[in-house]
Image (cartoon, rainbow, N blue to C red):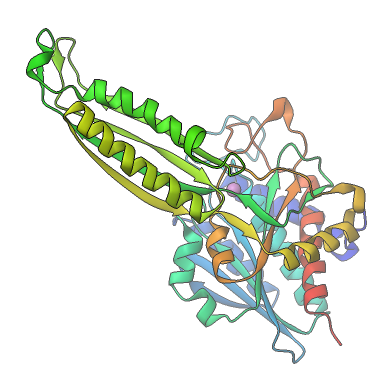
Length: 389
Ligand code: NI
């Protein structure tokens, strides 16, 4: 492995920084302390700092040379509403909040790269260090864009990185095309007609209609979608009634739809509308579908993915750069940035994890072993894309 020695010398500080952020987790749009810490480190390195995008978002601006080329490197800062169950000293100081997705490591790695690039300036152009709030479900990236991220800071491409358990530490996974799915939500209200449970013929039963609806919805992916297109439709909520002897007058359902292409999202939504209408007619109830688009799919552009793969290969060798991993059905709001700019989102191996510990698990912890590697990746990517001369 050929990490940057300048960054390696800084390893202990990066570990301390990462653990400090881990111990002080802050959830969506409340990343005040983390944001202040980011500003402090960037400012100490002599990097121009802009605050206030999406509230707690921070953009560091570092220029070198005269070229008008510019790139954005993005890290997310937010934690999750999870009660941490780790015993170590840097465990969360706040009950019910936890860095269970490794965003503490993302923030520390980008800060490590920023310090190095500020100290060495071995590039020609502008690098924007984008520290975003609220990746977990609240779309902080989208809000930063709405607040003018790409108007105020003009850049040609944007890059992201996520730690990935199940991939050994010291490896990367870099794939062109889709890497994370889109995540939509839906709510369905079935309005029937309440009745005595002993006299169902006097009502219109929303539970029976809802049960049929859940079954019918499962045929969308299995029976109407091209088998080579991936999608998931999960009904995760089904609420109706309170009594043993009363047929309720309404039922509510909810869930999520995942896919990799907007056309598939359109297809699933239209099919859901159609089936809801059919169930309504068949059961003599009213069915209202509220389908809401959430995060788009995260799709790497081919040219940028190729560049990122080469940078990772330069650091860890060809054998340690995976290009064959399947995309994840999880979602990521960096996708909003990739809708605006070409770019690439890579996974950095976090190790196999004790007991196969996955992201969002109360036992999760970012692997400090990969901090220097991740920071070196950011630095090398910048020095390549904005190569002097
Ligand atoms: Ni995450």
